Image (cartoon, rainbow, N blue to C red; front, side, top):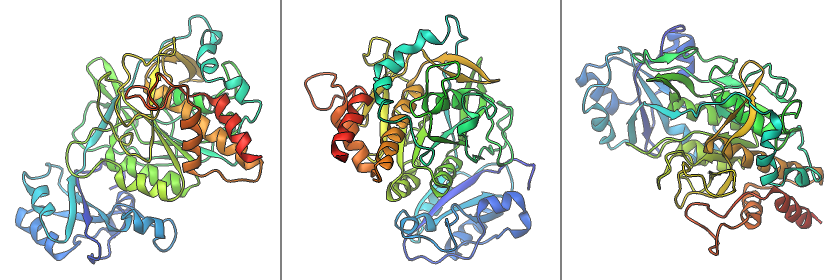
Length: 435
């Protein structure tokens, strides 16, 4: 099957205690269809036979070691399966619902593509100095007096990939992974959208721009928030053309795989400048977000760019730090999606950072606000580590929440969350608590 596009699939979560047939992980099928299995559970197999649908039955996740860990079991990752249709004609109407109604099944959902508009990057007009404002807005220079990061702290950037040769980034990159392998029939996809591999190179620029905000070395741009931390590029979004625009898009289930891979390969923080609306089945990314929480990994996500009150996932989960954007005056940007899920706001308008072909550009969006907070989390964890302490996910959130600059009189605002990121005050509060 290598070299071909992943076929339509159905995600199935079995109920606790239900025993399934031994089946391979779906990535094994991509590499070698000779290991494929055609049955999963007698009740599910019977439904598929009646529908006349030949399938490969696979596991959605693989254990991080030889056996499932307590965290994997508690998140239900051992009960998640992917049923891949061997013929690419699409899922027959009613099949997913029929499977979901089986007593052995907790949930069934069709595999689908998540897409996110990629705000266009603008070429440099006045140089890097034109965006000292975004770094000043979070008091970055003062925060760097406490720490510039620690190479043992790793931030995973789940995005369109990263320009692996960029002089601002190449020294801080660790091994990454490409999880983009798109469903057949989407001729509007451009560039690399086949074959999972170990080369998470960026073809769009979005992920590279995000990465520079977190870890840019400061060669020809303002320094990233945590330039001495490591960056893990995990490519989960490909490029798709929609009219004259490009959007980032990828299989929701493959984004999930990217989250688990990042956790299992040592990420301390995961930046997800993307979002998926809840359409059908369970909440998007729920099991892997829970897994990350149980492993103590902090996830930071963008709130969205539609300027309305709404929820995008993973930002809709309480355990995720959800970030809205400010404009150049420090107010909530007009495009920033808001609601009870928003935790903080950070600079997200005309942010200057790294771009494709070792270049630089300006861009706007909550996608570019989130990495300011991811970098802040990495910096807090780095400073604690320098004192021989390990900062928990809950402690990080408490520090950020209680040091944010409030947008009004309320402790939490429906548009600004707990307020604007103030990294200087966050580092000072942490310093005080470590003494």
